[in-house]
Each structure stands twice: as structure tokens, then as C-alpha cells.
Length: 305
Image 1 (cartoon, rainbow, N blue to C red):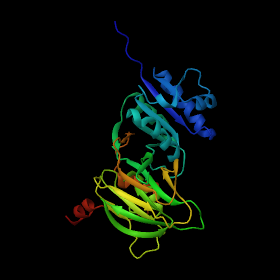
Image 2: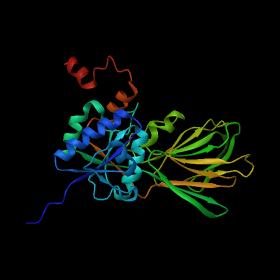
Image 3: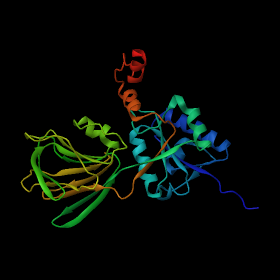
Image 4: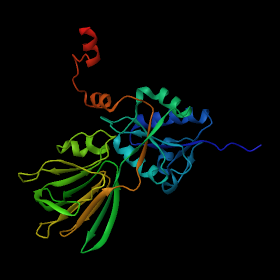
């Protein structure tokens, strides 16, 4: 008789928080009891101290794992997405942070969340990403990607960034600004939201362009086709350098003359979902929006009858 392939789950943990370590130990205990192997990164394994865990290299962390369980805030989930994206492993976040828009579960819903993992009661959403290419004098100097956003920002607080923005090969506007955010619908509730961009439902295929403190009469957030190619050029007259941030985690210096192109990512990020609540409900809950007094159209119609 052929032995069944053992199920494995990758844990990604914000070990700088004691509560995250405690939650990770509880999750690992339940998974191991259910016959599921737990994988941990070397540094995190040392901090968590689970003897039965498989210690894996970050380069191969997502291989053969059926889901990556991330315990922490959105920053930790973005790190988990970096590990899981190459193998299309679904990421399931348990939020211990503040807003935690990317997370699927809260710590007080831990038992039900682990049950759903053990019983494979989750669906998978594939979220649009962006690919980023930086060129200087016609030569590619770096490439990157982001789940939430790629942002081009001024490197020095006292200086303004001089840029020209382009959509689909055509110039749109020149701005003196603090920066420009190129976001996905997933990232519309992150940095782009703070910069004044619109909230875009994650089911919408689109790219967002949001200027940061631009000195211009035309400096509005834009929502464009997912097939569009967005670009920004750091003008030669800019004093000082700019900086490219991908998801606020990976950075690249941008000298004057650099060109940054942003397009739909070739590889999405998969998020595991155990709750079927619509995005509207998630938005209300995360931002604690006031909805007192709502009765619903169908109830109003019923009352008229």
C-alpha cells in the first residue's frame, strides 16, 4: 500500500510579539495533532521552539505546503506573500495588528480558523499584483513586484520630487510632489488610501495611480485598465534622488533620469478565505464605519406591503 503524502503548512510569525509566538505554538500544536507537518523559517523556529517543526530555507519555504498561515499584522502577511508567491501557495492571515485588511481571521477566532485549515474548508482568491521595472539611460537597473503598491517617493524630506507621469506611452502630467503611488485594488485600502486614493473592491481588475502632495491643478487619483502600462520619470533637474518602495518592504534608489514602469504582475498572490462575507462588510468592520439606522432596501419594501 502506498503511503499518503503528508500534508504540510508553513507558519510565518511576527516573533517580535509574544502574543504571536503564543498563537503560533497553539496553531502548530493543533496542526501536528491532526497529522499535518508544520514548516518554519530558521530564525522563527529558534524563537518559537517547536521541536517537531520542519525548518526550511526561505527560498523553498512554500514548496509542497498547502497553505501559509501568517500570524501578525499586514506587514507580516506581505512577508508571507513574498515566500508563498513563487509556488502559488495560498496565504491565510491571522490578524494581531491594527486594521489588518489582508488578514482573514482575528486571534479570538483561532479555533474555528484552525478547524477550517484542517478540514480544508477555505476558498482561494487570486489577487492582482504589479511588476515594476526601473531603467536608467535605457538599461534595466532593477525589477520588482508588489501586492499592495509600488511607490516612487522623494528621498529627502526637505526636497520635492520632479516627475513626469505617463499612461500607455503618452505623457499625462508633470508634477512637483512628494511621490506617486501605483496600487492594486488590494492595496487601495493601504498607502494609496492614506494618500487620498479611492477604495476599489478587490474583484475589480484595475490599476491605481495616486499622486502624493502634488503641486498641480490636475493631481487627482486615477483608475486605469489592468492592461495599461504606467510610468514615471524622475526629471533630470530634480535635486537629490528618489526612492522606489515595493509594498513598503523592498527599496531601490532612483537617481535623476530614472524611469519606472508599472504593469499588471505576471504572477498573482493567492489568499485563502474562510469567511464568505462581502467586501462591504469587511470595510465597515475594519474602519468601524457608522451604519446605525440602516434597514435595508428589501426590508423597507416589505414594510410598504
